Amino acid sequence: MTIPATQKTTPAAPKTVKFPDAPDAKGLAIATEADRRDQGFKDSESQISMVLRNAQGQESRRGLRIRILEVPESDGGDKSLVVFDAPRDIAGTALLSFAKGIEPDDQWLYLPDLGRVKRISGSNRSGPFMGSEFAYEDLAAPELIKYSYTYVGQEACGDLTCYMIERRPQYKDSGYKRQIVWLDTEHFRPAKVDFYDRRDELMKTLVYTDYKLYGTFWRAHSMVMTNKRTGKSTALLISTYRFDSGFKDADFSTGTLKRIR
Image (cartoon, rainbow, N blue to C red; front, side):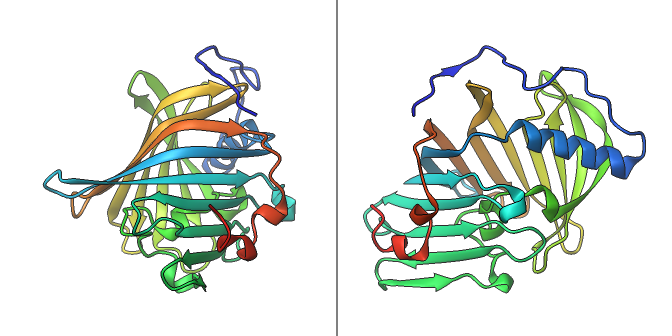
């Protein structure tokens, strides 16, 4: 089902939301509200241009699709499938992810040149995905239970005002010690995420822009991950979103990786 984007706001809850005062409880409450507002989309598929830039500004581009199947957190977490369509030398490469709670996510990579499916081990999930600035763990759904939360503060973020919360991974083998997330105070959409490595040094920043509203669900059409050490960046530029296409569990299995087109 193609839901046309609109700029008209359809709030999922009253604009004023009261939170506890204690920093940990407030951080969890804000994250829970953001998660609640994004529930019920069933499934989605997006067409994406991935733009890789080096420190000198030179670019290379890739075309890909991302499918997501919404799964209640009590049943494990969302499933996602990333499929590359271009350029020709990587077309058919696919990454399947099953988000978990505090257990390690399940991820499998299909490499068409080798004709085999490779399981991504926990120790490798912090590595770069296909030469991009996104790690494998960045591509699995950020289920609420994966992190502990603390409210940090509130500040302007562009033309908006954002809550700042710190979240710390509770799952094993994360490449991050903590993340600082900016969520706008009206719609609870992520505006920015700072990623700190295991030595607690700023490693990467992810910026979300160009939001559009599909029914009651906001989606960013630009997500740019910048490596603060190397100056390299990877942009995900989304051209289209489709929702409620009727995807099933069977569409997200290791057996489908070799057949996906």
